[in-house]
Image (cartoon, rainbow, N blue to C red; front, side, top):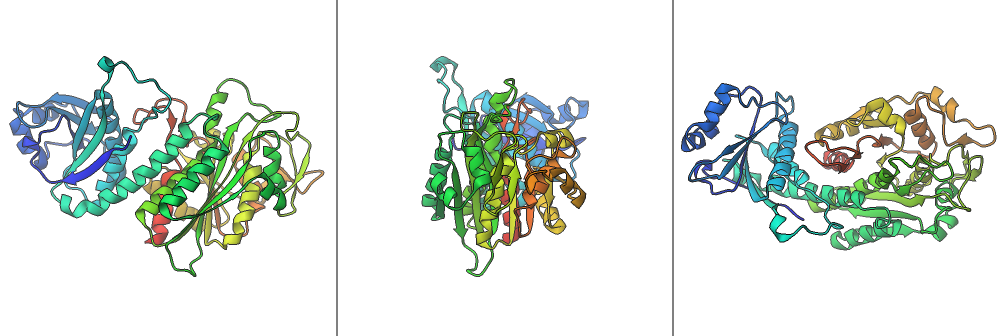
Length: 491
C-alpha cells in the first residue's frame, strides 16, 4: 500500500477531514495557529491544555471530538521538549499515522504550526513509516470487520507552496523504507537470494542502473572461498549483486554501500537455539537497507555516483556444510580458520568488501546484523559504528542522527587484532566473547583498502516487540542512514 502525501494551505477550522492531527511540544499554551480551530469547536483544545489533560510529552496522545463543521476528529500528539524538532516531529507523525491507520479514517491532515522544508519532509516520512503494514500473506478479514487503511496524508502549512521539493523528497525516502521493510518482513522461504537478485534487477530497469550479478560459478572463478564456505551447506545459489547509479561526474569516485544478505541464518553446524530462531529471517536487513537506499537515491536523482552491493545466501546445516576447525581461503589469499559457523556474516562480507575495491571507491559503508555482542553493548536503540577513518565514521554517525537511526562509534585499537589470530591460519572468524562487535570489525578490516565504516545493526534493524510507534518487525534501519550519508555527500 502506498500512502499519498501532499502539503497545502487551508483553514483548519473549516477543513473537511476525518482526522486532524495536531503535533504539539511539551508544556505548550494554545498556539496561535490553533486559535481559530479551537474557537470553532467551543474551546476544547484550550481547556484541555489549561487543565493539563494533555501536556505534550513525547508520544502522549489525546483524542477529541470535532465540531459540527470542519474536522470530524482531532488527535493531539506530543513531541516533548525536543532538541531536534525535525526528528521529534517525525516520531510524532509516525505515531499519529499508526493510530490513524488503526482507526480506519482513510485520510488524515497534520498541522504543526510553522515548518521549514526539513521539518515538513520529516513529518511526511514519519507518516509513511507509521502506516506501513505487511499484508501480503494475510487473508483479509470479513467485509464487516474491515477498516479503511490510511491512504492519504496532507500536511497543512501556510508555506505549502514552497514545500514541493520536501514532499517529493519524502516520497522518495518513504519508498526506500517501504521496499526495505517489505523485503525484511518476508519469510525466508520467499525472500531468497534469487528474490533479492530479482528485486535488484527490477530496480535497475526502473531507474536505468547497471546491475551485475555473480552466482556460485562466478564466485568460484573469483576464488571467493570465504563467501562460498557459508553457501556450501545450501542448494540455493548464492548471489553477489551490484547496482550502479551514475549521476555524478564521470571522474568522480563512487560511494559504495554494502549489505549483508543472509536470507536465513540457522547458525550452520554451530546451530542456534530453536527459541526465537524465526527472527533470523531478518539477517538480511543490511542487504534490504542497500536496496531500499538505492530506490530512494534514484528517485531523489542525486548528482553523485553510488554503487549498492550485497552478498546473499542462507546459512544451513547439512552434510556439505562448513565445519568448525575448517580452513578456507578468501579471494585475497587470506586463510581463515572457522571457529564458529554462526559467525558467517563476516565471512560473506570479507569477499564482498575485497571485491568492491574494483570500483576505486571514495568511501565504503557496510551494514550488517553481525553480532549479538552489539545488542549487549548498545541495546536496541543504537547502531554500532566502527571504521578505519575517524572523520568518515563521524560523517556516517551524523547521517545516522539525521535519519533518526542513532549510531555510536566503538574503538578499533590494534590490540583487538590479537583476539583473531589463528594457530593454523592467518586469522580466525571469531575472537571470543570479549569485545565481540569490535573483533568482528577487526576481521572485516583485513579485507578493506579504502576509507571504510562498518555499521552493526544487529540490535536496530528489527524489533522483537511492538515499539509503540512501529510494530514488531523491521524498523527500516539502516536505509535512512545510507540515504542521508549519500545526500550529505551529494550536497
